[in-house]
Amino acid sequence: MAVEIIMPKLGMSMKEGTIVEWHKAKGESVKKGEPVVSISSEKIENEVEAPADGELIGVSAEVDEVVAVGKPIGFIGEPGEQVPDPESGGAAGETKPEKETAPEQTRQALKPESPPPAAGKKRASPAAKKLARQKGIDIETVVGTGPGGRVTKEDVLQAAEKGTGTEVSPQTVSVPAQTETSQAAGGASSQEPVKKELKGIRKVIADRMHDSIRNTAQLTIMKHADVTKLMAFRKELNTDLATDEESVKVSVTDLLARAVTKALLEHPNMNSALKEGTIYEYGHIHLGIAAANDKGLVVPVLFNVQDQSLKDISAAIRSLGEKARDGSLSSEEMAGSTFTVTNLGASGISFFTPVLNPPETGILGVGATEETLAFSEKGDVVAKKKLPLSLTFDHRVVDGEPASRFLNTVIAYLEHPYRLLI
Image 1: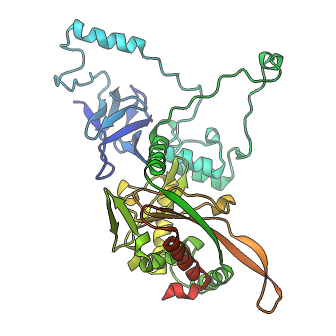
Image 2: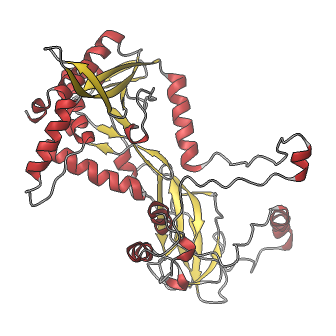
Image 3: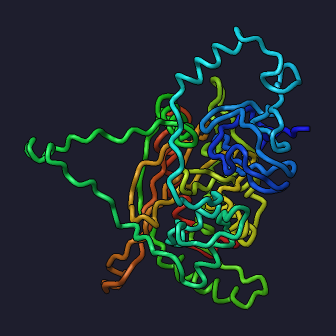
């Protein structure tokens, strides 16, 4: 008897999911526990494992199709077995009259055929593809040990250790050759632009950012923090912690999260939200730490960070960062933040205008540390490290002066780092 592959519930708020990729084609054998399809819900993408051994005898949801939680998206059965009809309980096509199947036949005839997979193209799990991109390894050169020669994450790791595969340079860009037609037209390209449908995670981000700009009164203020002492403090702290059995290493983001938390305790108006004409000032601090992966921007949350030590914060940020990179965050881990920190320092950006994460009142943007020269109190020229900070806030909730006091408090903690341990 055929077994249904069900659209899973990835989080408490999930109501529907989107088919991202089928890892098995109809007629292929599958083993219980083997990834058979990837699905996504908002900013989460997960693999769905086969519930039984057998053959993929049917697919009821194609790539990019949205399916409600609990509904079947495919079927596993014995070779030659008919796909069950969800309405009648029998095999599909057994009792349906011809007049009912005709519209379906017409719809299928009008439906554009999916292009066949490229000859010789390697089959690989999404996790393996992500890791291969991160390691700069050509997935086509990796020997797959999974079912049917499918490349697994372990295969990529093994290839990376052996130094096999072709390195892919991120700076290499493929530029299509100019055709004679385009050259004849004075060098202007006549090629059609590449069209990409706005969907999935990209659409979720687009909708939320547009709603944020449209429904709030956003203003950004900017100021440098002198982090010369902070960097020295961090270096000394990590030297002391190197003897720790757990090998904890504190990052600048960890120290920033601690500074923001302590500043929010002193300025609760920044730890608030405006909802339906009422301003809510929270007694807890759920700090969002924006992180990027190959799908887009995600914001994992540190819950009740006001009760956590610097060591706890560091461990939590490290754990959530790893989940963000491999796409394993749950919807619960990305909901409920009351203030957000976003960092573009790794990209070499200084000041920028971060967009609010509704319904939050504030978001702090962090740029790249800058090496500068300044005069000391004695008139000597000394080297300084400056950190650009950009605070965006909802002017409906907070005015410029109190927002400035909050930013100055964050800076005070960064410039007097030993206060972060109190």
